[in-house]
Amino acid sequence: MYSVGSLLVYGRNGVCRVREIATRPGNGEAPERLYYTLKPLYTTETIIIPVDTKVALRPVLTRGQAEELVRSIPSIETEAIRITSLPALSRYYQDAYQTSDCVELLRLIKSIHEKNRSATDNGRKPGKLDERYLRLAEDQLYGELCVALDLEREEVPSYIREVLASAS
Picture 1 (cartoon, rainbow, N blue to C red):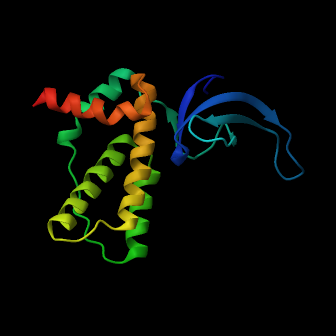
Picture 2: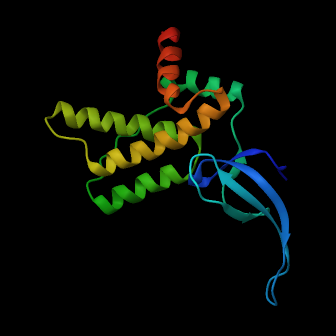
Picture 3: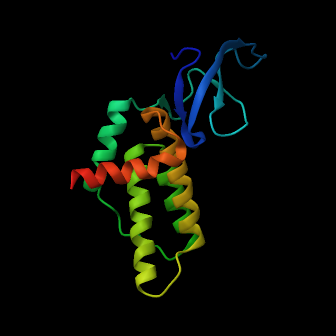
């Protein structure tokens, strides 16, 4: 169980702080349960979830894990995205995005960048759906990296570029 003040990643809500842990009364059908009250760092909502939730809930990366993740970016394989149906493409992106796994988010970001580069090279504009999921994946990943690395959100892309440039 996490403690009050812990920083966690909660699904696609991104980084959240545990504000409270409290028992909530049950009703005739459900017994009372222990709940976390989470406050996402980048939105105004409040989330109340059972402590024993099955939804992805994990601690934020440590600084060392974040640094290693950034150094591993060149080795993360991309996937050729050849889905032409918008509903199928949306499902594909949604499935990858909802994992809230940093490596999968990086794979998605790199794959969309590669797809967009190919489109541009062939005289086409990147698709709106591609741009939307690229932005969502970057927001979620960069939100966690800025907390782990103690950076401002807007500093994360330049930090990544600097680390990768010094490695080559």
